[in-house]
Amino acid sequence: MKMLFALVAGSLGYCYYLGRATKARKVAIKEDLTRWEGEGGNVPAVATPSPAPQPQSSFPAAENVRH
Image (cartoon, rainbow, N blue to C red; front, side, top):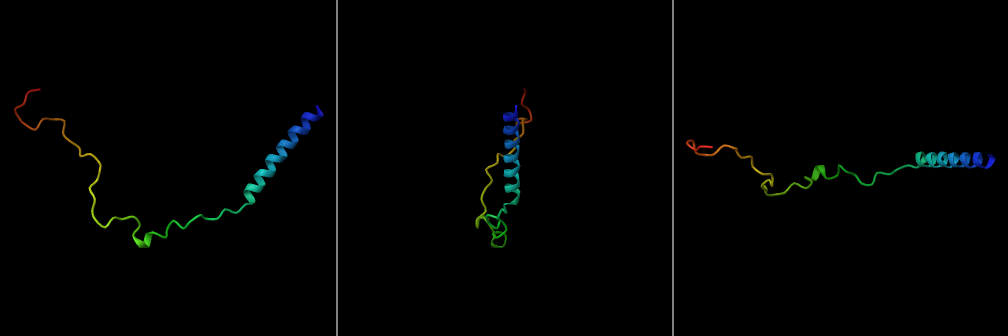
């Protein structure tokens, strides 16, 4: 019983230690994401057509067509 209690207490202490170490670590910004805003970013110089499909009507073009 004492061994089980020691094992549980040790695992809880280890989890607490890892949580404190993670909070204490300072995370640096990997790169400045706004640096491209003033330079135009990935805006193409030539207008490119959109690959999106054009919506079409479900009705036939002719007026006297029977369904």
